[in-house]
Length: 349
Image 1 (spheres, one colour):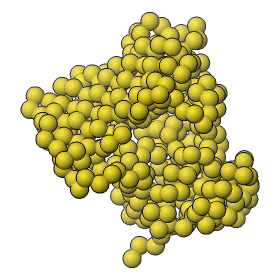
Image 2 (spheres, rainbow, N blue to C red):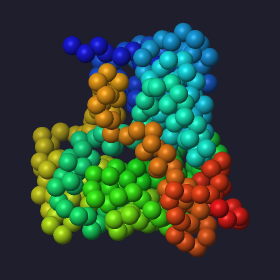
Image 3 (tube, rainbow, N blue to C red):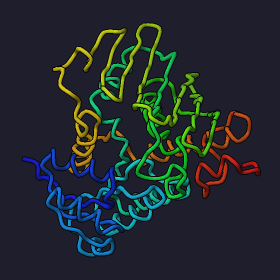
């Protein structure tokens, strides 16, 4: 029987709580919760039977096998690098970093320490996306790929906070961009080569973006993302060829259809309400990461996907600030700026 890993959680906010719930559903012991807010750390630790620690206490003591980094994105890389060097296997919540320079620094540390980093794009491990990826390789050359994420802006923090990168196009956009890239990778689309974007009401609670992502094989993917105050989350992913249409509803009720016939959920399953940690991929991604560490089996999302997502988002902001020009990938613009800053910069790459 495979040994269960000991886990530490780095952060104590809402997302940290979801990861803690995923660990509890798997029967994985969470040994420690660390946060800059002692009250929040204590509240989460009490729920899961863990102890609270200062950040610097967790590094020399090495209290677990896995460390889940769920701090603000601006802190992700510093936190993850410190944990890698302390001997942990690290899970980094999306977005992986706020700048491409930081993303490169994390990948360099991962290579130096010879321990893989899991990029926590949880939906990539969800049953619905798993099902779509299994089907998409069988339907032939893709003629259409689209992903959408519309929801109300967060209430637990400002959408303009610098530590979070700023704006729906970054905070929220990393998820549909990541899913589009993962889907295309299962086809003959080839690598992404160019991106163009329009961003409206940037920096507000009504920010919207439309991103066109072109691949070497000719596929043009469309990604739509935005905040809408009061909206129920409405996320989906669709891929089609000359012979079939695959449609995955992601939020609020996961389901998958092929040519309108249900495969998962929406009449194809038990009818039970979706569970956050399982049906949205939080627990499955952790299970696969632990299997990857022990056996080398592939994980649904790697640090390289995290960097590729950030590269597309950065290029999209550069494009949107320049009348939606097509920007080549890999992005050759400034690597030390957050995407929101790239939107308003006046110099060329």
